[in-house]
Image (cartoon, rainbow, N blue to C red; front, side):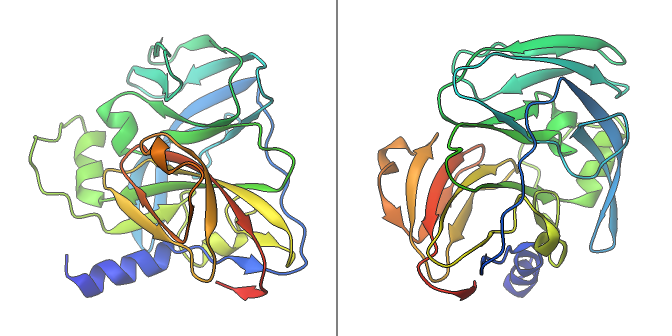
Length: 264
């Protein structure tokens, strides 16, 4: 991919920080049931096969995310509506993935967790490539709390995996699309959980998970953020930075203080 093409793809996925006196969206609490849904979604004219975590049996192109209180067990029934088996996997230390057979309903118990954010994903090539990935947020509930579920997509590769193929090691990967919460610009602007929209002088948290197949670097125009959690680079916790590396599978929580008005 040419640099100009990559820059355009990244621009389409960018998320604006809008710092104005508008109240933030209410987060989804812990659901009793989650559905694993096969379907399709469209980004910038590309129609791609997909897998999603859903709050209901109705197809949704956006993955459900989960918000839990600190140290409180979560019992959830998972309905695998896909034609293939998967495993319920997380980035929780010591977690053993739970098998999810095709068409089956399985009860999963997530033990009480420490404050932080965690990946929730389908531990299979099909699940990862087709986007069955989301975030579990625990605590950090004293301030508005947004989340960015980062994804990258390549249509031909997704079609091959959806049809039962497998990716050979060393195969070049050139994604055409980069998304935040399964959206690209301008739809990122209407996302109540991803579009950071707070009053000047207020403070918020942002949970960020790199669910894709590439490492990334995020830059905050006009602001530095406090790093409160970093799964892959824990030595950076406590740093105040405007640019953060995000290796594949990294999950971070940052705190942003809106000290100046405008859109960034």
